[in-house]
Image (cartoon, rainbow, N blue to C red):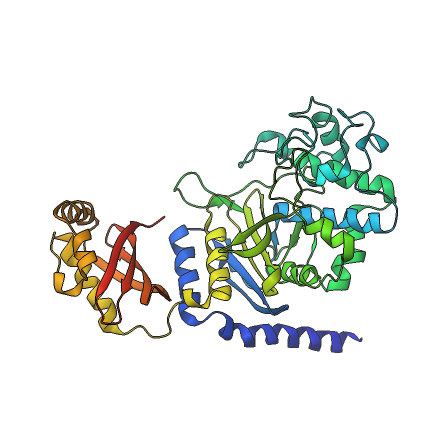
Length: 464
C-alpha cells in the first residue's frame, strides 16, 4: 500500500470511529465524563470503547499538557503502566508455542543464582505466586527511581532476597516477577522483548503508537502530573529507564490498547491452550482462588465476566477492562497519578455499554426532577408530604428518621441540581437512581415508584 492510500485508510478509520461515537456515548454521557474530570481536577482522561469486537469510540477530554496548554485528543499517548504485564505474558506464551520455553520451566534454568530458583516456575512468576519481593510497591516517586538501571540489576537486588512466602502458597503482587519473566523470555528466545512485541503483536494489529515509553518519548505524549492530597496538579518526575522492564514500560493510545483487546476477544494472537493459560484463573497449591490469570485479573461486573488490569507509573493511570461474553472492552487513561477518576469513568462507561437500563435517560420529564427536589427540600426541614408515599415508605419516615435526615441534610445547603442516572424495573415497580448536588456536597437517592405513582422507597445515601 502506498503512502497516499495508507494515509487515506488511516483517515477513514479515524473518521469511522468518530462517526459512530454519538451512538455509543450520547451528549449527556459525555457531559457526565467531562463533569467527573472537572470534579477530580485531573488534567485529562482519554476513553476508548470496543463494542461487537470493533473500536467504536475514541475521545479525549481535558489537557495533555497544562503548561504550555495543549488539549488531549484521541491520538495522545499515555503510559499504560502495569497493563504492560499482559503483553509480557503474551510474549512468553508465544515463545512456549514455539517450544523455546515452558511455563513449567524452573527459574533455575535461566537464573540459578536467585532465591529458591529451583522451586519457582515461570508460571508462578506470571501469576504473582512466586514469593519474590516487589521492588516497587510505592504509589509515589522515590529517589532511587531517578537513576537508570537494568533488569538484571533489579533481579540481583530483589530476587536474591529471601522469599516472602513459599512458592505457590500465596498470591502477592510483585513487579519483580515480571522483570524476571521478561529476562527469562529474552534468554530463552535470544530476542529482545519490545522488538519482539512490535514484530509479533503491535505491527500485525496496527498498534502504531505502542512502544517502550521510556526509550521512545514523543513530544505529543501526555505530560505526567501528580498532586498532594487535594492540592493542584504538579508535574510528576518520570522514572528513569530500566526499572519497569517487562512490568510497566509500555506507552500507547487508548485506541491501540483497544486493538489489542479486540485481538484478545477474538483469539487472534493467542489461541487454544495458550489462550486458556492466559485468561484462566490460577489456583494456589491448596486450591484457593487468586482472581488472577497471567497478567490479567479475573472477576465480574454485575455478574458479567471480566478480565482486566489497571496500570500506574509516575504521573499516569490506566484502566483496561475486557468483557469476553459481550465482545466488548473499555479503556480509560489519565495523566495524573493521584486521582482515581480513571476507574470511576471506566466502570461507568462499562455499565452504560453493557447495562442499558443504567444509561442516562434522553429526556427526563421536568416534573419528575422537580418533585424529587421538592421532597428533598422538605426533608431538609424535617417535613414530608405523606400523600406521595406508600404505607411502607411512611413507616420508614418515622420521627427519628425525619430528625436524622433533617439534621444531616441541612448543613449541605440548598439543592443545586438533580440528575437521574439509572432506571429499571423490579418487583412490579420502577427503580430510579438520582445524583443530587447540594451547595456543599452531593448525595445519591434511590427510589421505587408503584404503578400508581407513589413512592415505595425514597432512600438518601452518601455519594462516594
